[in-house]
Length: 362
Image 1: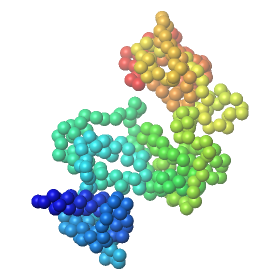
Image 2: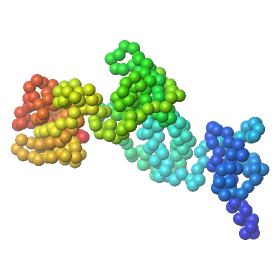
Image 3: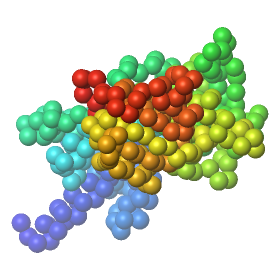
Image 4: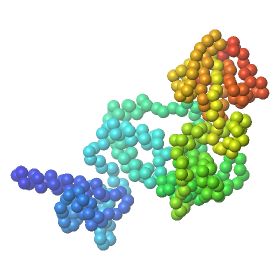
Protein backbone atom coordinates (compact mmCIF):
# COMPACT_ATOMS: atom_id res chain seq x y z
CA UNK A 1 0.00 0.00 0.00
CA UNK A 2 1.35 3.41 -0.94
CA UNK A 3 2.01 6.03 1.74
CA UNK A 4 -0.82 8.16 0.34
CA UNK A 5 -3.34 5.32 0.57
CA UNK A 6 -2.17 4.47 4.09
CA UNK A 7 -2.65 8.07 5.20
CA UNK A 8 -6.13 8.11 3.66
CA UNK A 9 -7.06 4.89 5.46
CA UNK A 10 -5.81 6.28 8.78
CA UNK A 11 -7.75 9.52 8.28
CA UNK A 12 -10.91 7.56 7.43
CA UNK A 13 -10.56 5.41 10.55
CA UNK A 14 -10.04 8.46 12.78
CA UNK A 15 -12.99 10.26 11.21
CA UNK A 16 -15.34 7.29 11.50
CA UNK A 17 -14.37 6.72 15.12
CA UNK A 18 -15.20 10.34 15.91
CA UNK A 19 -18.54 9.92 14.16
CA UNK A 20 -19.34 6.90 16.34
CA UNK A 21 -18.24 8.82 19.42
CA UNK A 22 -20.76 11.57 18.66
CA UNK A 23 -23.76 9.23 18.62
CA UNK A 24 -26.04 8.99 21.64
CA UNK A 25 -27.90 5.96 22.94
CA UNK A 26 -31.30 7.66 23.23
CA UNK A 27 -31.18 10.94 21.34
CA UNK A 28 -31.27 11.12 17.54
CA UNK A 29 -28.45 13.22 16.07
CA UNK A 30 -28.63 14.69 12.60
CA UNK A 31 -25.74 14.60 10.15
CA UNK A 32 -25.54 18.40 10.18
CA UNK A 33 -24.87 18.37 13.93
CA UNK A 34 -22.25 15.64 13.48
CA UNK A 35 -20.55 17.68 10.74
CA UNK A 36 -20.42 20.75 13.00
CA UNK A 37 -18.69 18.72 15.70
CA UNK A 38 -16.21 17.23 13.23
CA UNK A 39 -15.45 20.71 11.89
CA UNK A 40 -14.53 21.78 15.42
CA UNK A 41 -12.13 18.83 15.61
CA UNK A 42 -10.40 19.89 12.41
CA UNK A 43 -11.97 17.43 9.96
CA UNK A 44 -12.56 19.03 6.56
CA UNK A 45 -15.33 16.81 5.24
CA UNK A 46 -18.60 17.08 3.34
CA UNK A 47 -22.06 16.20 4.60
CA UNK A 48 -22.34 13.54 1.87
CA UNK A 49 -19.16 11.83 3.09
CA UNK A 50 -20.56 11.70 6.62
CA UNK A 51 -23.74 10.11 5.32
CA UNK A 52 -21.70 7.50 3.41
CA UNK A 53 -19.62 6.82 6.53
CA UNK A 54 -22.72 6.30 8.66
CA UNK A 55 -24.26 3.88 6.18
CA UNK A 56 -20.98 1.95 6.05
CA UNK A 57 -20.64 1.91 9.84
CA UNK A 58 -24.22 0.65 10.22
CA UNK A 59 -23.17 -2.61 8.53
CA UNK A 60 -20.63 -3.32 11.29
CA UNK A 61 -21.87 -1.46 14.38
CA UNK A 62 -25.26 -1.51 16.19
CA UNK A 63 -26.34 1.96 15.07
CA UNK A 64 -29.68 2.88 13.52
CA UNK A 65 -31.31 5.70 11.59
CA UNK A 66 -34.84 7.07 11.57
CA UNK A 67 -37.01 7.98 8.63
CA UNK A 68 -37.26 11.70 9.31
CA UNK A 69 -35.91 14.47 7.15
CA UNK A 70 -33.23 15.40 7.98
CA UNK A 71 -32.21 11.92 9.01
CA UNK A 72 -31.15 11.13 12.57
CA UNK A 73 -28.73 8.50 13.86
CA UNK A 74 -28.10 6.89 17.25
CA UNK A 75 -26.83 3.75 18.94
CA UNK A 76 -29.46 1.04 19.27
CA UNK A 77 -30.78 0.73 22.82
CA UNK A 78 -29.53 -2.87 23.04
CA UNK A 79 -26.09 -1.95 21.73
CA UNK A 80 -23.22 -3.04 24.02
CA UNK A 81 -21.00 -0.20 25.16
CA UNK A 82 -18.03 0.43 22.88
CA UNK A 83 -14.90 2.01 24.33
CA UNK A 84 -11.62 3.14 22.78
CA UNK A 85 -9.15 2.90 24.35
CA UNK A 86 -10.59 -0.40 25.60
CA UNK A 87 -11.64 -0.48 29.26
CA UNK A 88 -8.77 -2.07 31.17
CA UNK A 89 -9.16 -4.39 34.14
CA UNK A 90 -8.44 -1.71 36.75
CA UNK A 91 -11.20 0.46 35.30
CA UNK A 92 -13.55 -2.55 35.13
CA UNK A 93 -12.96 -3.32 38.82
CA UNK A 94 -13.59 0.34 39.74
CA UNK A 95 -16.88 0.44 37.78
CA UNK A 96 -17.99 -2.84 39.33
CA UNK A 97 -17.32 -1.60 42.88
CA UNK A 98 -19.11 1.65 42.06
CA UNK A 99 -22.14 -0.32 40.87
CA UNK A 100 -22.32 -2.27 44.12
CA UNK A 101 -21.69 0.62 46.52
CA UNK A 102 -22.74 3.94 44.99
CA UNK A 103 -25.79 3.42 42.78
CA UNK A 104 -28.16 4.34 45.64
CA UNK A 105 -26.64 7.83 45.68
CA UNK A 106 -26.66 8.57 41.95
CA UNK A 107 -29.45 10.55 40.25
CA UNK A 108 -31.39 8.61 37.57
CA UNK A 109 -30.03 10.76 34.74
CA UNK A 110 -26.45 9.82 35.61
CA UNK A 111 -27.26 6.21 36.49
CA UNK A 112 -28.89 5.65 33.09
CA UNK A 113 -25.73 6.90 31.40
CA UNK A 114 -23.54 4.60 33.50
CA UNK A 115 -25.49 1.36 33.04
CA UNK A 116 -23.81 0.55 29.67
CA UNK A 117 -20.42 1.14 31.30
CA UNK A 118 -21.36 -1.18 34.16
CA UNK A 119 -22.30 -3.82 31.58
CA UNK A 120 -19.01 -3.31 29.75
CA UNK A 121 -17.11 -3.69 33.02
CA UNK A 122 -19.01 -6.90 33.76
CA UNK A 123 -18.06 -8.34 30.36
CA UNK A 124 -14.42 -7.40 30.91
CA UNK A 125 -14.34 -9.05 34.31
CA UNK A 126 -15.85 -12.28 33.02
CA UNK A 127 -12.80 -12.60 30.78
CA UNK A 128 -10.34 -12.19 33.68
CA UNK A 129 -10.06 -14.71 36.50
CA UNK A 130 -7.63 -12.42 38.33
CA UNK A 131 -9.98 -9.41 38.46
CA UNK A 132 -12.98 -11.54 39.36
CA UNK A 133 -10.99 -13.03 42.22
CA UNK A 134 -10.26 -9.51 43.52
CA UNK A 135 -13.97 -8.69 43.69
CA UNK A 136 -14.58 -11.91 45.62
CA UNK A 137 -12.01 -10.78 48.19
CA UNK A 138 -13.20 -7.25 48.92
CA UNK A 139 -16.18 -6.31 51.09
CA UNK A 140 -17.40 -3.13 52.82
CA UNK A 141 -18.95 -3.78 56.23
CA UNK A 142 -20.83 -1.49 58.56
CA UNK A 143 -19.54 -1.07 62.11
CA UNK A 144 -23.16 -1.14 63.29
CA UNK A 145 -25.75 -3.88 63.47
CA UNK A 146 -26.64 -4.81 59.85
CA UNK A 147 -30.15 -3.72 58.92
CA UNK A 148 -32.33 -4.28 55.87
CA UNK A 149 -32.80 -0.97 54.02
CA UNK A 150 -36.33 0.45 54.29
CA UNK A 151 -38.57 0.27 51.24
CA UNK A 152 -38.42 3.44 49.15
CA UNK A 153 -41.03 4.59 46.63
CA UNK A 154 -38.95 4.46 43.40
CA UNK A 155 -40.96 7.19 41.64
CA UNK A 156 -40.61 9.53 44.61
CA UNK A 157 -36.91 8.72 44.88
CA UNK A 158 -36.31 9.55 41.21
CA UNK A 159 -38.15 12.85 41.63
CA UNK A 160 -36.06 13.73 44.70
CA UNK A 161 -32.81 13.02 42.88
CA UNK A 162 -33.92 14.81 39.72
CA UNK A 163 -34.96 17.91 41.67
CA UNK A 164 -31.61 18.02 43.44
CA UNK A 165 -29.70 17.38 40.21
CA UNK A 166 -31.59 20.11 38.32
CA UNK A 167 -31.68 22.52 41.30
CA UNK A 168 -35.50 22.62 41.23
CA UNK A 169 -38.02 22.77 44.05
CA UNK A 170 -39.70 19.53 45.08
CA UNK A 171 -43.43 19.15 45.73
CA UNK A 172 -43.82 16.21 48.08
CA UNK A 173 -46.18 14.30 50.34
CA UNK A 174 -44.12 13.28 53.35
CA UNK A 175 -45.20 11.23 56.35
CA UNK A 176 -43.03 12.12 59.32
CA UNK A 177 -42.35 9.55 62.01
CA UNK A 178 -45.21 9.45 64.50
CA UNK A 179 -47.65 11.19 62.15
CA UNK A 180 -50.80 9.36 61.06
CA UNK A 181 -51.12 11.24 57.78
CA UNK A 182 -48.69 12.59 55.22
CA UNK A 183 -48.36 16.33 54.78
CA UNK A 184 -47.69 18.24 51.59
CA UNK A 185 -44.53 20.34 51.46
CA UNK A 186 -42.63 22.33 48.88
CA UNK A 187 -38.94 21.77 49.52
CA UNK A 188 -35.67 23.30 48.43
CA UNK A 189 -33.39 20.24 47.96
CA UNK A 190 -29.85 20.88 49.18
CA UNK A 191 -28.07 17.53 49.46
CA UNK A 192 -28.34 13.76 49.80
CA UNK A 193 -26.72 11.96 52.74
CA UNK A 194 -26.68 8.23 53.38
CA UNK A 195 -26.43 7.29 57.04
CA UNK A 196 -26.30 3.53 57.52
CA UNK A 197 -29.03 2.02 55.36
CA UNK A 198 -31.18 5.17 55.40
CA UNK A 199 -30.86 7.91 52.77
CA UNK A 200 -31.84 11.46 53.73
CA UNK A 201 -32.71 14.47 51.65
CA UNK A 202 -31.29 17.59 53.25
CA UNK A 203 -33.70 20.40 52.42
CA UNK A 204 -35.48 23.52 53.60
CA UNK A 205 -39.24 24.06 53.49
CA UNK A 206 -40.56 27.02 51.55
CA UNK A 207 -42.99 27.83 54.38
CA UNK A 208 -40.11 28.20 56.85
CA UNK A 209 -36.99 30.36 57.04
CA UNK A 210 -34.55 29.49 54.26
CA UNK A 211 -31.81 28.63 56.75
CA UNK A 212 -34.07 26.17 58.62
CA UNK A 213 -32.43 23.07 57.15
CA UNK A 214 -33.99 19.68 57.96
CA UNK A 215 -33.54 15.99 57.12
CA UNK A 216 -36.21 14.04 55.25
CA UNK A 217 -35.85 10.25 55.09
CA UNK A 218 -36.40 9.01 51.54
CA UNK A 219 -38.52 6.04 52.61
CA UNK A 220 -41.08 8.41 54.18
CA UNK A 221 -41.89 10.18 50.90
CA UNK A 222 -45.28 8.91 49.73
CA UNK A 223 -45.06 10.92 46.50
CA UNK A 224 -42.90 13.63 44.97
CA UNK A 225 -42.67 15.62 41.78
CA UNK A 226 -40.19 18.11 40.38
CA UNK A 227 -41.38 21.72 40.28
CA UNK A 228 -40.60 24.08 37.43
CA UNK A 229 -39.35 26.67 39.95
CA UNK A 230 -35.69 26.95 40.85
CA UNK A 231 -34.70 25.86 44.35
CA UNK A 232 -33.35 28.43 46.79
CA UNK A 233 -30.11 27.56 48.58
CA UNK A 234 -29.18 29.33 51.83
CA UNK A 235 -26.29 31.69 51.17
CA UNK A 236 -23.86 30.08 53.60
CA UNK A 237 -24.98 26.45 53.29
CA UNK A 238 -22.12 23.97 52.98
CA UNK A 239 -22.80 20.26 53.28
CA UNK A 240 -19.51 19.40 54.98
CA UNK A 241 -19.96 22.18 57.52
CA UNK A 242 -23.54 21.04 58.12
CA UNK A 243 -22.40 17.47 58.81
CA UNK A 244 -19.51 18.62 60.98
CA UNK A 245 -21.92 20.44 63.29
CA UNK A 246 -23.30 17.01 64.21
CA UNK A 247 -26.70 17.77 62.72
CA UNK A 248 -26.95 14.24 61.30
CA UNK A 249 -26.26 12.74 64.72
CA UNK A 250 -29.75 13.70 65.95
CA UNK A 251 -30.34 15.70 69.08
CA UNK A 252 -30.77 14.05 72.45
CA UNK A 253 -33.48 16.02 74.33
CA UNK A 254 -31.64 15.85 77.66
CA UNK A 255 -28.65 17.68 76.17
CA UNK A 256 -30.70 20.79 75.45
CA UNK A 257 -29.99 21.70 79.08
CA UNK A 258 -26.36 22.27 78.08
CA UNK A 259 -27.30 25.02 75.64
CA UNK A 260 -27.96 28.68 76.45
CA UNK A 261 -31.56 29.77 75.91
CA UNK A 262 -30.54 31.79 72.84
CA UNK A 263 -29.40 28.62 71.07
CA UNK A 264 -32.14 26.18 72.03
CA UNK A 265 -34.03 26.72 68.79
CA UNK A 266 -30.87 25.90 66.87
CA UNK A 267 -31.05 22.39 65.41
CA UNK A 268 -27.34 21.83 65.90
CA UNK A 269 -26.39 19.70 68.94
CA UNK A 270 -24.19 21.21 71.66
CA UNK A 271 -20.45 20.53 71.74
CA UNK A 272 -18.93 19.45 75.03
CA UNK A 273 -15.66 18.10 76.36
CA UNK A 274 -16.27 14.62 77.74
CA UNK A 275 -14.12 12.51 80.05
CA UNK A 276 -14.35 8.75 79.72
CA UNK A 277 -12.79 6.02 81.87
CA UNK A 278 -12.46 2.61 80.20
CA UNK A 279 -11.12 -0.77 81.07
CA UNK A 280 -7.85 -0.61 79.07
CA UNK A 281 -8.85 -3.34 76.61
CA UNK A 282 -12.28 -1.87 75.98
CA UNK A 283 -11.02 1.61 75.06
CA UNK A 284 -7.86 0.58 73.20
CA UNK A 285 -9.40 1.20 69.77
CA UNK A 286 -9.68 4.92 70.57
CA UNK A 287 -5.90 5.15 70.71
CA UNK A 288 -5.85 4.25 67.00
CA UNK A 289 -9.05 6.01 65.91
CA UNK A 290 -9.48 9.11 68.12
CA UNK A 291 -12.84 10.66 68.95
CA UNK A 292 -11.64 14.16 68.04
CA UNK A 293 -8.58 16.14 67.02
CA UNK A 294 -8.12 17.39 70.59
CA UNK A 295 -8.35 13.94 72.19
CA UNK A 296 -6.02 13.28 75.13
CA UNK A 297 -5.39 9.86 76.68
CA UNK A 298 -3.47 8.36 79.58
CA UNK A 299 -3.54 5.17 81.62
CA UNK A 300 -3.26 4.70 85.39
CA UNK A 301 -4.43 2.29 88.06
CA UNK A 302 -8.07 3.24 87.41
CA UNK A 303 -7.93 2.38 83.72
CA UNK A 304 -7.68 4.18 80.39
CA UNK A 305 -8.70 7.86 80.50
CA UNK A 306 -9.94 9.63 77.36
CA UNK A 307 -10.91 13.29 77.03
CA UNK A 308 -12.29 14.75 73.80
CA UNK A 309 -14.62 17.47 72.54
CA UNK A 310 -17.60 15.91 70.78
CA UNK A 311 -21.13 16.66 69.59
CA UNK A 312 -23.65 15.62 72.22
CA UNK A 313 -26.05 13.51 70.18
CA UNK A 314 -28.16 10.38 70.36
CA UNK A 315 -25.54 8.69 68.22
CA UNK A 316 -22.91 9.36 70.91
CA UNK A 317 -25.18 7.86 73.59
CA UNK A 318 -25.89 4.70 71.58
CA UNK A 319 -22.22 4.28 70.73
CA UNK A 320 -21.08 4.61 74.35
CA UNK A 321 -23.71 2.11 75.51
CA UNK A 322 -22.12 -0.43 73.18
CA UNK A 323 -19.06 -0.64 75.45
CA UNK A 324 -21.17 -2.13 78.24
CA UNK A 325 -19.27 -2.59 81.50
CA UNK A 326 -16.01 -1.83 79.73
CA UNK A 327 -16.94 1.85 80.14
CA UNK A 328 -16.51 2.64 83.84
CA UNK A 329 -17.10 6.35 84.25
CA UNK A 330 -18.41 9.30 82.22
CA UNK A 331 -18.36 13.06 82.67
CA UNK A 332 -20.25 15.38 82.38
CA UNK A 333 -22.93 13.99 84.64
CA UNK A 334 -25.70 14.61 82.11
CA UNK A 335 -24.01 12.29 79.60
CA UNK A 336 -23.47 9.66 82.28
CA UNK A 337 -27.20 9.73 83.10
CA UNK A 338 -28.10 9.32 79.43
CA UNK A 339 -25.70 6.42 78.82
CA UNK A 340 -26.26 4.46 82.03
CA UNK A 341 -30.01 5.27 82.03
CA UNK A 342 -30.06 6.16 85.72
CA UNK A 343 -30.59 9.30 87.75
CA UNK A 344 -27.41 8.45 89.67
CA UNK A 345 -24.50 8.77 87.26
CA UNK A 346 -21.51 6.43 87.06
CA UNK A 347 -23.10 3.55 88.95
CA UNK A 348 -20.15 1.32 88.12
CA UNK A 349 -17.16 1.46 90.43
CA UNK A 350 -13.69 2.08 88.99
CA UNK A 351 -12.51 -1.37 90.09
CA UNK A 352 -15.40 -3.17 88.44
CA UNK A 353 -14.09 -5.65 85.87
CA UNK A 354 -15.61 -5.91 82.41
CA UNK A 355 -17.53 -9.02 81.44
CA UNK A 356 -15.73 -11.99 79.91
CA UNK A 357 -17.02 -11.19 76.44
CA UNK A 358 -14.52 -9.21 74.30
CA UNK A 359 -14.81 -5.42 74.04
CA UNK A 360 -16.72 -4.00 71.06
CA UNK A 361 -14.62 -3.64 67.93
CA UNK A 362 -14.73 -0.08 66.65
